[in-house]
Length: 171
Image 1 (cartoon, rainbow, N blue to C red):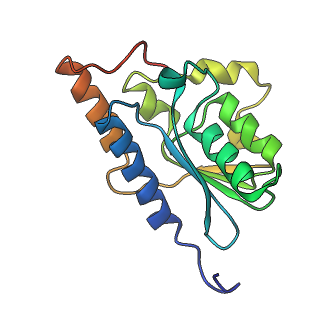
Image 2: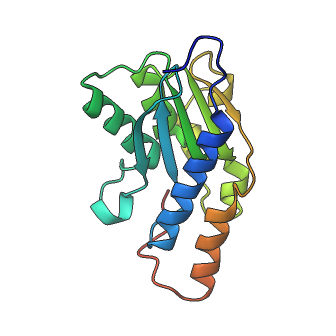
Image 3: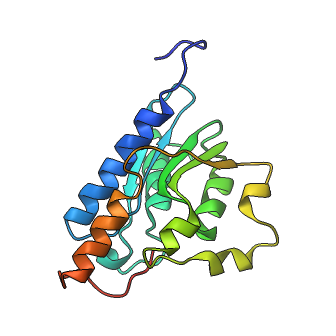
């Protein structure tokens, strides 16, 4: 457990999220991974995007991480937690974080960078009255780390080589 004056290693945690995302791509997944961490920086839950594998349109990495955190710790509210994601969350994932009580969302690749690799989910924000980065809670901002786009590049490069990447590209 970290003391109150110890800084949470968000950059290190984000590097782990990006590494998890790259690993998921190398095993046939898409480049989305997420962790939920508590106020001390302890990982409460992890998730990768399983939409294709589970035929579940809600099995986004962020939702999976929130579900795992709640199930593992026997609670449905994650007050004070931070959600770290390899790609900026879509509207579904922002809303899941909001309803779970997540206080902060950090992402390695923003929505525009993800769109450049074929993951354009900006239309999902049209369902919302305001841009999620303008909400009071959870606060959201980019946290750039070295290699943040590697999972997306690996996915794109695999697609170019004609490797089996599954069905449609849906984040």
